[in-house]
Every structure is written in structure tokens, then in C-alpha cells.
Length: 360
Image (cartoon, rainbow, N blue to C red; front, side, top):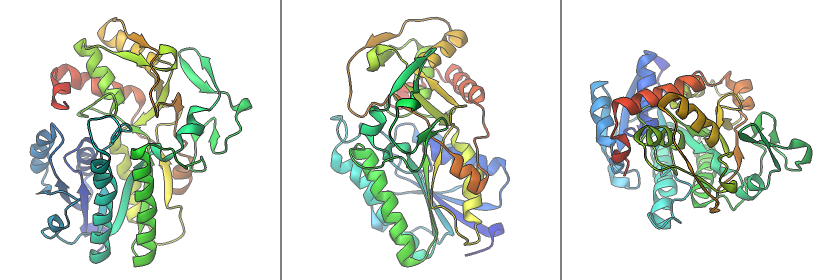
């Protein structure tokens, strides 16, 4: 591979929220990295990011990673960062997308990327998900309510891989996970096998919820962004499940904070390091829906949230990622504070009042 000063990186899904955020942070850090991006532009609003990325000097290719022929025009690169996916846990079972479509995007596309890496001798970084962990052990974790959030009752917990720091890489990752989670878990395993069989480096970064300004938030995807935008716009909001309390908790972080970790992985000298790490905001950057409502109330004004006791598959009461292994191995931890992320989204919502319509 070329030296870091001339490193060329292909980012898939580059016009999405995560892909474009990675580009922006790389440019802010003035890294000597040539960025090539590919996107099929099927996500509503992606054209907005396309214009912005061109202004930042990114070489953009309109293509679909499921299509082998779309790789023929791509140049050789040193690294591929796979940020393309259907990120909804309800994908394939919600009646809006087919199961085949989900698997073609999240698994079939990854196979084509791995074949590209094999032929070009490029390294591969997969942005995976916290949803590779088992739904049943997560849903059955004993909980207690502290203030306005669920907190795991660890004294009554018999599941391995969970602590006060959150869910670690040792937590069970056996089905059921959801079709989405299983597609990403299968992609992880294939990536590791390809790297071993064809001698190219592979890193798997299991990301928790990501959030920030410019995210095309939906309730089943960018929940933090969706909640803030919907609150400001006066759109209906509901606490679904868990008694309609809004006590369910997720941690989150800004996708730009991935850049320092990925550069460390790209520069790795080949010594032993864990190939899979969890990444998340941890307990410090975590919030329940009820707590997020309190924040929105102070920021935008009071409003009512409907309580729904409808229970949905794949809903879990608490998910906080333990990133200790990433910190020990790479010195990684989130750089952007929770307040900065929330305020960034709120300011964006005020300046883009029709933003949610772009994600429809």
C-alpha cells in the first residue's frame, strides 16, 4: 500500500449522513487523504450532500454497490470504508421494504465490496451495528427505573458481557437479532474470512446510535435527530412500549468521531489487535426518550407526548455500548459532548424547518 501521505480511501454511501460526516471531519483535520465516494442516491435528500461533497473536492461516482459492473469505473484505492446500508431494524419486516432488498443491500453489497478489495489489495473497514447483539438477552435484562430512565439491575443479571460500562463484545450475538442485525453480522463474518483468505486487513467497528446535524432522521433510524426535529415542528410523538413511559435508553455519538479511530486502523503496522470493537457514547452520552423530551421542552417549549403501550418486535429497554476495548486498543473515545450534539441538531432544525420531509 502507498504511504499515508498519499492514501486513497473509497467511502461507500458517501452521500448519506455518516459518509458525508466522515468526509467533513477528514477535511477539517486536513488529513492528506484522497477521498473517492460512491452512492446510489436512492435515499431522499442525498442530492443535498452530493453538492456539498463536490465542493469539498470528493470524486463522486453514482453507482450501486450491489452491481458488480459499477465497480469497473472505480480507481484503485488503499482502503474501503463501508458506510452504505439500510440501517433500520424494522427493514424487511415492516411492509415498506422487502427482506430480499435488505439482504441485497447489507450483505450482497458487502460481498461485492470484498471482491473489490481482494482484486485491488485494499483494506476494508466495515461500519457495523449494535444490533448484532441478541434481542432476547437484551430484552430480558432486568431493569429498574432511576429518575426518568431504565438502568440495568446488574445484581439480578446472569448474562455475560454487560456491566456498568454497557454492553461489551462478549455479549451474546446469536439470533434472533432482526433481519437487519443478522445481515450485518453475516457481513462481519464474511469480511473477516475474506481478509484471512486473501491477505488484506479488515476492521469491524460496531457502532451504536449516531447523531448530528444533517441526519435525515426517522423514528426507526436516526431517533435522536428525528425526536428533536419533530418536537420543534410540532409533529406527533409517542412513547411506544414499555408502558408508554419513555424510559428506554440508547447511547449515541457523532459520526465524525469515527475518523480518528479509522485513521489509526489504517496506519496499523500489522501487529495483533482485536478485529472487532464496540463504539458508542457510553453512559456519559446516553439518554432516555423521556429525558430527551425534557431537553426539548427546555429548548423549544413544552408539549405533550402520547403514551402507547403497543409492544413491537426488536424493541429493547436499554442499549449502551461499552467502548472500553476500543479505548484500550486505539485510545478512542467520543470527542463530541452530548450537549454539543443535541444543540447542533436543534440549531439545524431551526434553520431547516422542513428537513423531515426530505427523509420521507
